[in-house]
Amino acid sequence: MDHERKPTTFTCAVRIYYEDTDAGGVVYYANYLKYLERCRTEWLRAAGYRQADLLRDPGIAFVVRKLAVEYLRPARLDDELIVGLEVERITRAQVFFRQHIRRAGEDGDRSSQDLIHAAVHIVCVHAGQMRAVSIPAILRNKMEALQ
View (tube, rainbow, N blue to C red):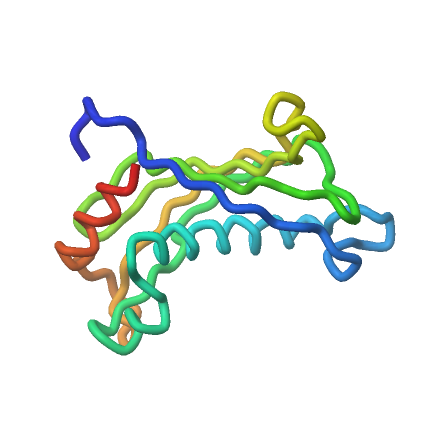
């Protein structure tokens, strides 16, 4: 991606249900990873691609290679969360994201609270062989164009 372009950004909303919480009444820590994944999936869908279709043709999948998460505050039952991503860099076969999860504020974004910061590194792989392959050029171009 050209260094003078703004980072690609995307957000989606997630509501916290009882099934998302642990015995302490807060979101179970591993569930945040699901929310981050949902955001990346919806971002890909916004580019015009469904993961099931990519598995069939051209036979690729995106897998997490590396993940670093900083847990700042807990989410609780009935919270509305805003899950977002910024694409830091796209290479031949990899995408590097900065992601966040925020509690939506009563007055919109002005009183939102950061809950999670994450750095996520995904790799495009051949679905059958699970080896790294190039992101198809048309898909990479659409990923870069989502701004």
